[in-house]
Length: 130
Image (cartoon, rainbow, N blue to C red):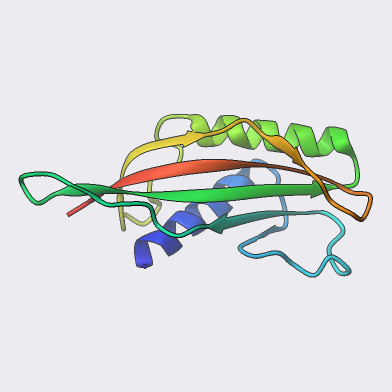
């Protein structure tokens, strides 16, 4: 559990470094925050075990960018997707996990009913499990 929390905090820090503030770990109140960025984690994926007892575990993150301007939403999502796809971008900041790989999909438009634009993508983080 601690490793997944660290992965979320690392993702939150990376998004803030890219200028996406505020960054939430769950959907915020839309009445209070017209624009925001959200990073969430799904259920952990299967752990792969090797003959020596070590293994890898993958975590899928979903990152959403809600903006009033479609151009700003596309730009924020595209730059973040590129950053999440760089090798080593999601290395643990406090050493709680050892990164194996990280990858990100291309952003896509999500339908939102209130006139704002939401673009999002999924990123997969794989770390060593001992």
